[in-house]
Amino acid sequence: MKGLGKKILTLALAATLCLGTGVLSGCKGKIANDENTLEIYIGNFGYGYKWLDEAIELFKEQDWVKERYPNLNIPTPQHNSDRQFPANRIISGASANTIDLFFAVDPVAAYYDRTDPSTGESYFADLTDVYESTVPNESVTVAEKMDDARLESQEIEKKDGGKAYYGMPWADVFSGILYNKSFFDKYFDGRELPRTTDEFIALAADVKNTKDDSGNSLTPFIFSARYNYWMSSVVTWWAQYEGRANYRNFWLGVNEMGEYDGSTFSQKGRLRALEALEDLISRSTGNSHKEATTMEFTTAQAKYLLGEAMFMPNGDWFENEMRATQAENPYNYDITYMRMPVISAIVEKLSYRNGSDYMSDEMLSDVIKAIDGGETSFSGVSENDFKKIKDARSMLQKSTGHEAFIPAYASAKDLAKDFLRFLATDAACRKFSETTGGCSTPFEYDLQTSAPELYASFSDLHKDKFDILKNAIRLPAAGEFKLNYYGGMGYFTRTSSVETVFVAQNSADRKTAQEVWQADIDHFTSNGYANWNALLTRTGL
Image (cartoon, rainbow, N blue to C red; front, side, top):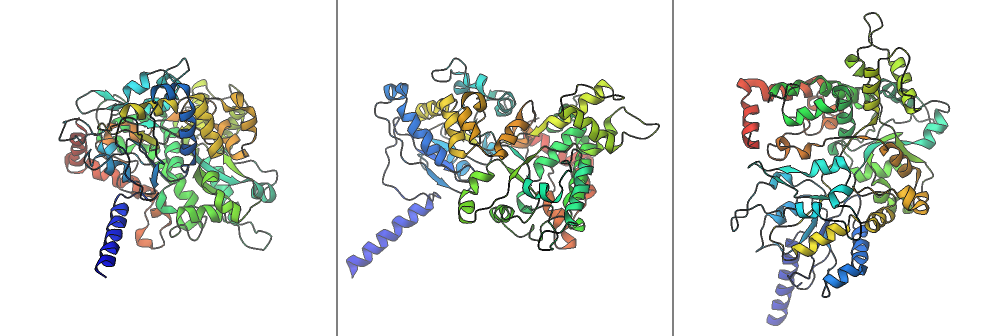
């Protein structure tokens, strides 16, 4: 019995150590920690990890890789669904971590200023040399091939004033508003999709008042409130109202004169965007799914697939993530993206006046329709007003977080960097899109031209997404600014999820758009701007 008990204890200890890594892909034997062995981790979320497995096999087939790494060894990547795992593992240091390359899902920028006590340097490898190097077997650098807006978001300003590139984006995340085209065509035949937020609000009310074939009222919106997926819409409306430059000023913490100014939280576009969302989804409207405050996001997606709502805010990983659900419960709905409506309140920022009145929403919609049709002007509308509306129609929020990181102490740092360079190649870009069913990387690669047969195989959801992306104006993301990654300033710092406070079941937990907006103003401007000054201090300003 002693021998059996010892064996059981040993097995239990091994299991504990395996679980202690936080990696759910299985406990493996000892892996060599050397320059030829590339240990990889990937967060297992919407895009999954099959694309990475296939990218690794493609990487191994490259002649330049075979020549440079004759003893190459890439064990099966580790993965889990712990968003904090990459950052926590990287800053655990060389004594606790042997993973050389992390494909993270959430930003780890809050840890950029952490320094390794053994070196006094950042825990993260500076990838500037990767960005400046030539894409293997191509004639452009990694930086030149990357989407300009995403490249801009990757440059980090260190507290000492220097610049660095700590992360490499591995997915070009697209977030927008899905709609059930089958439902829309069936119940609203002949009606056009909303071009303004007021039209969107009116349509939502009409959806709610429409009965399905069983006599039940249709539900306009489904989402999981705790995950804040409406934020991309709010941010877009906010920037549409303020203009891209002034939206960017918010994250720089400056006013329109370029001076640091805590009153930037009073930007009217923030309030108008919140009001638009409040009018769409608040509990008082009855527009949101009854389980919005309680269900998980994957549950909301599954219910959407089953036809329980007309619209859903979501990312382009939707189909990839829901493949298993669709296989078990086949659906016949055509689900795709609609273009982001322009915030109706933008008329307050236009010079147009009809007497003392702003441009009507009907006229605004007509101008947008003309823009969508390729027109370059509209009778009675100034050139500047037309451009502002056109820019607003083209705005899209960038997403950050799907980035790869290499620990500064990684034993296979050079190999990891070469793998990142490889991901910028046309072959790797195509493989990512093929494996994920239409998702894309942040590198410039025209699938429609370069791989027409593959492009043709994609669903309308992805084709419509690519169409929306043409000539899009990408908005700066929070994660590219020091006030966010050093100071912790968020989109709405005092309210973690605006969706939750708009649809909360308990009335005491609800807030209005005005209250959410005012909470940030009060927090940062009260007591002689004490919290604003503290934010600047944390940021090194």
